[in-house]
Structures are given as structure tokens and as C-alpha cells.
Length: 444
Image 1 (cartoon, rainbow, N blue to C red):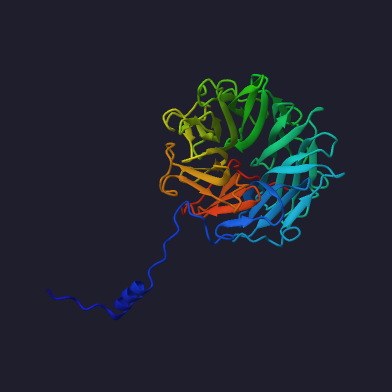
Image 2: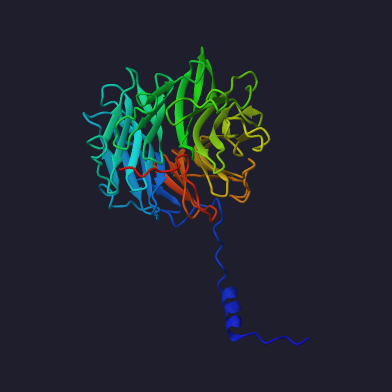
């Protein structure tokens, strides 16, 4: 058989490839080594990163608390601090009088301004606190006169845990007050919106006079407001806990088209060996089809090595508030890492419908930042890290590995905010939709 003569260029290419093999390509679930050091950024300040958000230019904004102040930092896409923001990339905000302040949620307006919500005791009692910053990190004085708004609800302590922007620029902030869900809506100038529930405030019990905490909020495309959290009911030294979702009409009334009365509660089981079930909801996101995904933990949950452990818990609901039986047959998924206990702290939806949660895995006294990715039917996505699960030791002491928040970049990479770290993973090369807070308003 006659062997054809190879072109000179092709022969050179083959020789080159045999001499210099192609580097192994990073796969979904691998750490992104172009970010920080090996995919991990340690924050310069001892900031507790509680939430992150992505700007349209890809820069990452983190929020949290340090030394009794709101702490907001901005990072370039490679993980370095953006020195055009604040002082060296970080802004610390005191609400006045040496108050104790901490931020738990952050969103970016379409005009680049940054909204952060949490709590402050500056009014004399712990209250909802919201700050708005210009894109350079200075306080925006068009918001509440000085960039800061605090709202005291009654005479009891109140804490805001999350916020979302409506398409009209109004700001929905959720948390807890007097052991109830608390939902507040502000106008874009920082005043309470009296078209919502009469005074801009709705405080509501989940139905059994327990300890209720709203931890997540998302805005539907029709403007309705979905709030997620949990309630705990104590009886002596034991307690039960369950997922709670509420949906509001735009005027602040409960939407009776959602689960009949506007409230849906969920337990993942009756408990194990007589122990009462404890299900905590930490984050929510809305899919493009309107279905609602809630993520958190269940305990007692999956049995591992003969004992019960806390595990990741995910529920998906239809637009009417019923559990979605196309998701793992009953709408509920429990996931445990190969060893140790775990929980999900936040959730985001990729544009291809895959579900990403971040949280932690504790194993033999060590704490790891954890990520899990699911297919649209609720099964673990084995194209991600081989089994759908990835965990990362953020420091040599194997401590402070709690991932609190997640955001998906436009290139599909997954960013997690974890304690005093940021971590980035390779994802799918797809576009993403924002976790929990869509759409962003173009407020002043």
C-alpha cells in the first residue's frame, strides 16, 4: 500500500505535539487557577463574607462585617482587590455612634450602584439597615440623605438577611422581627414604600408561633415577591424546624394563588429514630420557567455509617406552590458528602437549568467549602467533579470553610463567598441568570 507523503507543516505539528503534550484541560468542578492563588482569594481584612454579587463588567462585590461595621469589597476578575473602590478596594461603614453593624446581603443596580442590607443597633435597638454606595465606594447621598437607612420595627430586635431589586427600582428587604418573617419595601430614594402593606412593612408568622426567619427573597417576572426561610418550634430541649415559603402580591398582601393561602411549609421526613426533624432553608432562586428552588439542610437526614447526619436539602416547587414531582419524583432531594455532615447555604440556577448550591462539609473535625450541582431532574450532575460534588480546603488549618453565597459568571464559572475567602470553580461555558434576585432595577 502506498503511504501518502505528509505535508511539511503537518509533520512539524505532529512532532511538536509528541514533544510537548497538550496540558490537561480544567474540567467543571475544578478550581479556577486563574483566580487568586490556585482558585482561592483570602480577603485582606478579617471580613466575614456573607454575600457576593457580580457587576456587569465581571467584578465581584462582597459584603459582610468587620469590627462592628458594614464591610464591602470589590475584586477584579482575577481576584485582586479593585483599588478604584473605596480605600484599597474596601469600604467600612459605621451607621453612627460606634454602633454594631453587619451586612448580610448585596445586590448591584443596573446603573452600577451597590445596595447592601443587614442590621445596625444605631437607633438604640437592633434594626434593619440598608446602605447604598456609588460605583466608587462612596455613600450615595441621594439615598435617605446620607446613603444610610435604618428601620426599627416595633420595640424588638430586627435583622435583615437578604434583599432584591424590583424592575421599577424599589427595594425589597427580608429578615426577622419578633420571631416573625419581616418584609420591607423601600422606594429608590430610601423611604419606606407605603403602597406595600400600607406602611412598607409586613411582619408575619408562619403559622405556629415559632421562631421564624426569612433568609432569601426573589422577584418573579410578574412582580410577585417570593420569600423563603424557616420556622423552629421549641418544646423543652427539643425543637422541630421546617422550610417556609411565602409569596406576596405587589401590594404586600399574601398571594392566595400560592398554596391556597400564600404560605407553603415543607419537611423532608418525620425524623429518624424518634428524633424530630430539623429542616432549615437558607436560599432560594427562581428558574426561567417560574419554578422555585429552595436549598438548605435537613437533620436527621441521610443515614451514613449507621448514624444520622445533617445533609444538603433541596426542594423545588411549581408556580402554584406545590412540590414539583418532576424533581426527584417527590420534589425533594437530600445529598450527603461521602463522609461528614453538610449543608447548602445558597443556590443559583444556570441558564441551562442546572442547579448549583454552595455550603460546607464537615468531616473529622475539618470544615470544607462545598459545591454541588444538579441536573434539572434533581439527580447529581456527574459532569461536575465526577460525582456532582466538590469540596475545597480553604486554608491549612481546615477551618472557616463555610461557603455562604454563590454567583455564576457569564462564562459559567462559579464564584463562592466563604467566611474570609472567595473561591472560583470551572463551570459550564454558558450564560447565567442571577441567583435569587431578578431582575435588577435601574434606580436613581
